[in-house]
Structures are given as C-alpha cells and as structure tokens.
Image 1 (tube, one colour):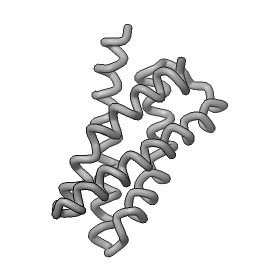
Image 2 (image 1 turned 135 degrees about the vertical axis):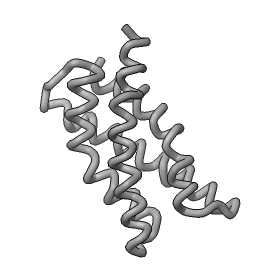
Image 3 (image 1 turned 45 degrees about the horizontal axis):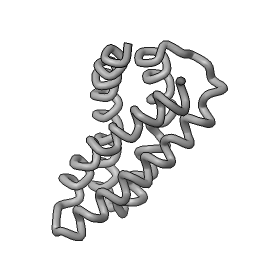
Amino acid sequence: MLKKQILNFISVGIINTLVGYGLYAVFIFLGLHYTTAVLFATVLGVLFNFKTIGKFVFHKNDNRLIFKFVGVYAVVFCVNIIVIKVLLWYGMDEYIAGFCAIIPSAVVSFVLNKWFVYR
C-alpha cells in the first residue's frame, strides 16, 4: 500500500509540480521576490493539490481535511524558502534554486500528508 501511494504521489506530484513551478517561474519573470513568488505559487496550488493528492493518492475526498492540508503546505512553504535562500546564498540562480527545492519539499509534503492529514 505504501509503495503504491508513493508511486501515485510521484505521478500526481509531477502534474502538481509543473503547475506550482510554472507559477513560481512566471512570478519570478514578472519581477517578484522569490519569497513572494513561492507564496503566490503555493496559495494558488493548494486547492488543486488538495483535490488531486486526496483523491488519487490517499483515496479520500473529505473537505474537512483542508485545514490540516493548509498546515502541511505552510511547513512546505518554509522548507521551500529555506532551501532557496541557502542555494541563493551559494550563488545559484533563482530559477534553478526553485527547481532544486522541489525534491526536499516533496518529501516533506508526502510524509506530513501521509501521517498527519490522510492517516
């Protein structure tokens, strides 16, 4: 069951990541600071991600879980900002830093969703 959830999370996560990173890149292109770009991309992606992760990964459609899900995304937002900030400090480009933050953020997202939101 865990292996299937991880594979489903990766599949759904690819779509969610394309949407989220696409929004982040657009906001950076528009001149927003990376923290604002991450914030806007996260807020816009939360509802979409809530439905896709709940339905296709954990097979739950309970809208009451949205508050826990938002809490998880608050943590994921912080992980994103920390990873990007560290990578920028080492001289990495904002686009590449945002891309590199995807993996640690995805791991944190899966673990917290699995054991906190959709247990």
